[in-house]
Image 1 (tube, rainbow, N blue to C red):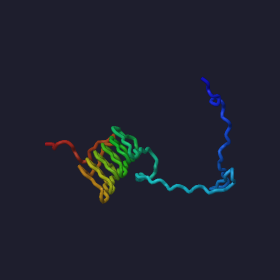
Image 2: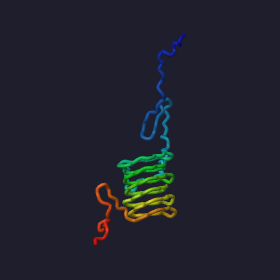
Image 3: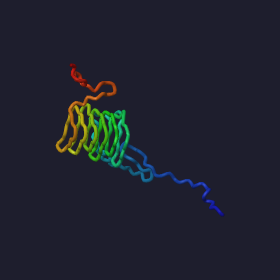
Image 4: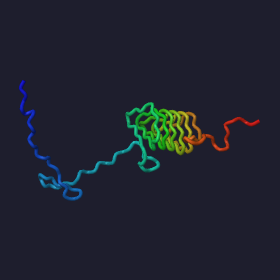
Length: 184
């Protein structure tokens, strides 16, 4: 069997590609033609379907479940912000939960702030502020401290004021309340 000799020979050196040389800020000069051109127009900023965190900065840990992604059977902890654009079935304890218009969360969540543009179904405890936007739908057992429901937003199920949660160290009881029977 004869092998072609060109398979084992080295390639001939190719000339380097024509690369632009930077001559002044914001302009380029082509090495071949010497022509100066302006840089291409900047692309418009990307639109984020999930609003920025109400606390401001992007610092801290952030988990984004993108569109058409399904995250099932997990426990989410130590997450500053959960952004749901797809579908999540989970148990979660976080600081901020944001559900985009096409997003859905099924399960149990304890958060400081919840912004619902999509759907939530399950047990939701919001320690600070729950906002159900016009496209949002919340179903299940809901506990909140502050509540905002935009026109068109839906809130169904067992909804109660007072999101006192035993945050890993304290008791869920409010001061002055007793779970025991009357002394007699």
